[in-house]
Length: 541
Image (cartoon, rainbow, N blue to C red; front, top):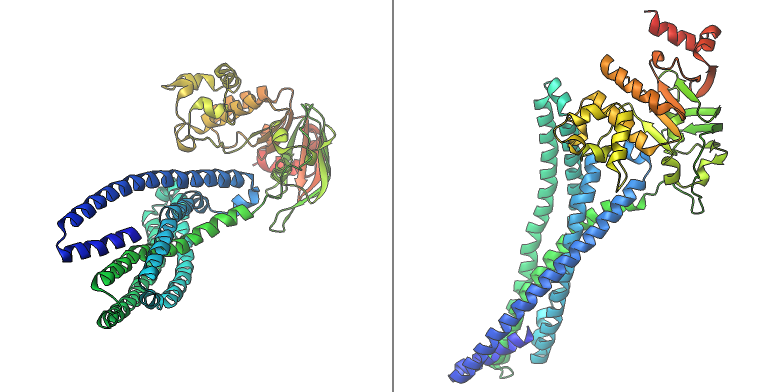
């Protein structure tokens, strides 16, 4: 850049002297310089783009892995749309700043230093006059930057709200249509969209005020330079060609200053996104493997709850001093009213949560002394609502395995009574399940969940009312598959319909977080206690 200013100075001299040879040489050098600059610019653009995208890729993978380790409580209180926005748009904004910093900010600073050095060499008083306004410009940029950060934080929160509303509304579109609530959802969306618009406009308004103010200060410095330059020329301290060279240097400062101002604004706006990402990274899970944890060996399936007490973060006590021993291969059913603690028992088993008091042992080993993956790989869960992921039938059955044997997948599907309906699909095991398994019926999804558990081959099995939402035909197929799956395993079955638990080895009745009854179906009916009351309510209507 200083060379360009010097070249313009010499060109002005050659033009004034009518030196065509000098003009030709400078023109040729200028053309070669611009071609070389273009080649360097291409290399810089490509390399910086690749570097910044790699930074975003590494950061996105790191944040996602970290989010995967967070406790279930965090996801219960967080919005899916907001988390998705942080992992996509917020991180893309961070990448843009990284790119701008190395691609524009660093070169612009180097240009400023070089040009100012040349201007100082050419005329120190004029350079000092040019820089006289610099402190005011810096203060103005800093003041506007703080306002941009505040408005950008508000804007990011609003657009995260909008993303969450979209996820919620589109995910529940069937309910929306069932209640003819399209206009209601459109009104809600309009409200959030308007709030986002207002927040974004405040940011743009700050910038729209900043640029004229900074531009005025810059114009003021140029006017001072012209006035002092004219005075020095009249006094004989400066030639016209020298002044042209100096003004060329001043002109070369315009683009870097504008770029630096714009980049500073961008950085302040992006800081809001960076803050939202760091909020995720600063949160650490309460349930995690101890640094010296051992790998849980292959288990027999003996489970012991010793004085287990647990309360959720909300403060509600779910279990109080629960003592329970389950023998290897024994099937027990957990029965009780809603909120009695049934689900909590099976959530503590794979350490989705840790109890505040007491301990849980598997084959005599405290589950907090082993690694989480080695514990959870030996506990199979068949939930009430099956969650399927985008991909093929085979990938969903072998979920969590990078490589799998299709023959094993088919064997698991046959045990789960799923092989026949899978083969009837157009692409068989390579058929796409659709988002959340939309292409399959409830019974088909449930049988895939059973096949998934078969692939895991767990010694401990958790059944969370796996047939409650099915029709009679699907229930019969699923129940037959469950009977096969339960053979030789320790089973915890959460039951609301008592007809499904008559054949288990033992029924455990919970009430307000404590075990109030325990025994077989016939034993508990004979006791005429709480289980008998539940039974009477369901079968004597």
